View 1 (cartoon, rainbow, N blue to C red):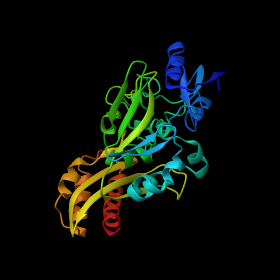
View 2: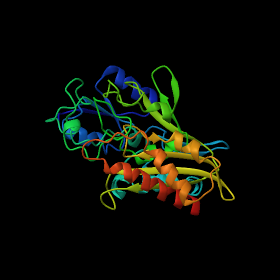
View 3: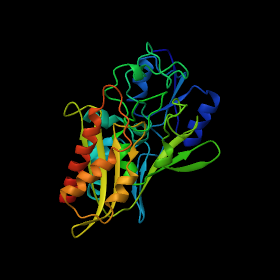
View 4: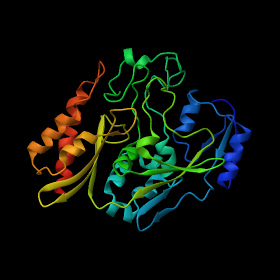
Length: 324
């Protein structure tokens, strides 16, 4: 790891001002992803700006929304009783993320900004357009079992790693951002961007801006998060699904569905949601939804199995959500 300076700040303005003085500075709270990237030589920062003392660690419940501060630890959010009751999908997603030790350190803001877990991105020996634009994507011709089947491009096929982001996507969360001159609010649907011809751009956060909170509108629905992975814990998703349903008698009134582990951003299944409106709850409905979910899939050489897995995960997730 290259040497770096360290500074601790106590206000959002001071944090942003530090970046204005040093454009290579990086904000750090839990550091569970950033420090690993720096050790591997993938990311360089001359200054680390410690934001743990900023007043961004509260969970607030309001009439129309929940506001989660960006420096809230994942474990604190997961075990919050009101979140467990109102949004079990958030708790389930978080408790299937990382390990208990990492969840005690990692923050909500940092989790949403974690970099892709593509081995070719994280090893400077290999070419990677995300790390060095124009170098090429070694994953496309390499071993790409963990990579995208939706939303990829000829320049990048890495998948977004955050379980929390998938859960927040079905809840229409809004990301609150503080910059030097203004505060912005961006829908999570718009915040993450597909790689296209610019895979180095992963989201709409500008240099020097700081995520300060996540706002989630209050919804009355059943929700569930289902994750399939190679081992029972401390593993990223092969395929995951977040589901929220409004059910009346034996009919689905509305559905919200997003997949993880299959695309460069949480993959919202808009067509499946539209199909499920008004459908009777039965196996035939779930199977038809699964077939629709994989309609746009374009697998890589080693991950065609994800197509069948997407169908099975959705069918199982819908069954659990309807039974709960």
